[in-house]
Length: 431
Image 1 (spheres, rainbow, N blue to C red):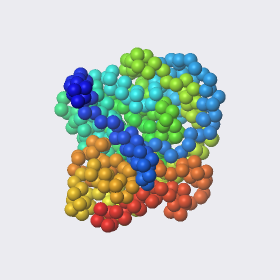
Image 2: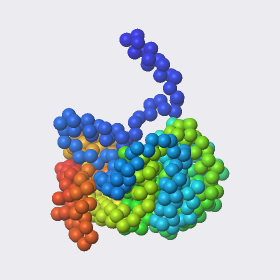
Image 3: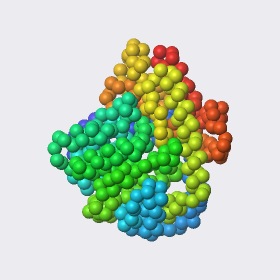
Image 4: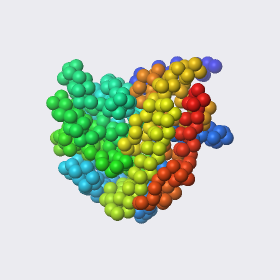
């Protein structure tokens, strides 16, 4: 007992910024789901947003071919990879990209943390936003300002809202704009992006455009805000979502020449922290970013599957009486159970955390509460990652011209279909 008390007392030596900091919600739900499965529980994993698709074979082969490479690479990244990433941005985003502005890191998450570390400013986030943006700011002792959104506007930030936030005073601000969105699946069109860019330029706001899901825009029509605000936008991308390589941990930043002072600072801190990203993975990433017919076909099939599954799931949830925005990209839905609030309240469910816990216990479906994404605790929003299916088999059978109808989805995405139907039945039964 005395030993425990001693170590409890020594908690005072923790950095105040991390006292009480919980593990990332997405990581925690994945680990909990795996533990429940090991214990014999049936769990359908719609918590962690991990791509269901395999890494393209030609990219895997490139990793095999370079498995022997053991030397440290430059902190900014392998020169050939930086050139490939720049060319990829020019080709797919239509923006002026120079390899000198490319930074490579062990996941875009790490690069974002370093950006927040070196940029002395206020973090501005749409609510909802991905679970790790705000905790990173907290770790660094930085303020976060949330911009509320709602389903009626597709969970998107408007230019007038951003302008109102900036009108509170001239201070350095970093706006993180993630689209297609995690957690909502929403995206921005050219008109919306241009309006946001005009405000950001006038208010001198730094924009981190997190476009990690850009390549899985369901119609292949992703547009970067960097086209309209090139001098003040850093574009974040990587391999995790469109290339199925989340566990490989490779992310990229594209920094414009006007912000080379930020790129220099990030690179300097990188030399004192992660030093360099895994060499074999960087060589393999060259092949991924070079693209080509095989990669194009892989992406076309991926988009078809996600478009069909996301559209079907959204329609079923709406039929059950929930409010759901149609996903435009990525693999997420953000249903609002507010229309069922009275029935849920009668069962003691007063917020999104309790809602997700009851869903897990009573239906075996693991999802994440809206509060983890910056929404009010009492709101009944839930993030669903519709990824628990055999992506390899689905891709193989998602040939052009084949109808990806409900029968196809049941055959290839059965666990997700089952999960959505369990949620709908649970709602119909009074929650």
